[in-house]
Length: 266
Image 1 (cartoon, rainbow, N blue to C red):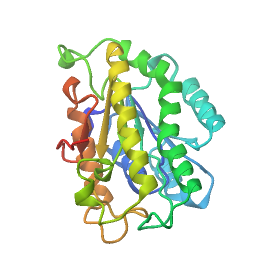
Image 2 (image 1 turned 45 degrees about the vertical axis):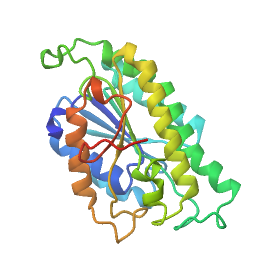
Image 3 (image 1 turned 60 degrees about the horizontal axis):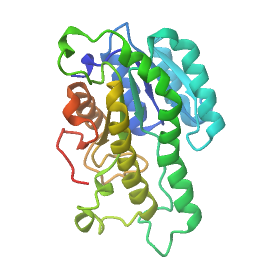
Image 4 (image 1 turned 90 degrees about the vertical axis):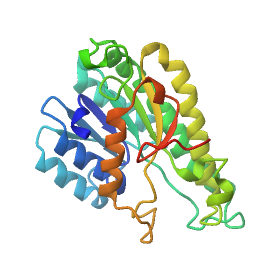
């Protein structure tokens, strides 16, 4: 379903894991009219080699942008760079994927300090907040363009103008008794719960602009953060998420869904 996504698409945290796979599948499955802005902290570093190789495979389709979501100046610089290239077209889809987890698993209360809490919150919540705030004019520009005929009567979609915040099942307060034994992860859990509230607030504010805002849980994925025991590959997770994104509409704005489109309680 991901071929239905199009336009200017920006993804954060793309040097590895889910972010890298998002860029890969978007590059493969979107048309020539689409352009992907792949953001990472150190575009010239060793950890971004796979991303650079991917950009080489799709010349003219992927632009790598330097972005540290914990640094406001870096965010401002990324917004300026993207704005200059996009011009009048606007930004159709912003995927806030970049996130960190501290301390190391299982992240018990005894092992967690104030610094861990603040650093994780800064990247996982304040970063997406500032990105959306600064990119809002470009998102509005995309939303104000003519609505495709297929979207008549349903004004919101990821083809038009949308923000996707990558969240997690363990952000769910209701499901905490079911998931807490897996890993305590105090900073990560609480930051993602805050990200869910950010999603809800932005969905309320931006509905007048016809900008869709949804949180998506990618599943438990085999990544550096997810670990080797995770049952999902990045490929399968991203196939599912892109399918969900391609079908989102007004009714899904402000919701927390999983990679298969199932609703997760707050």
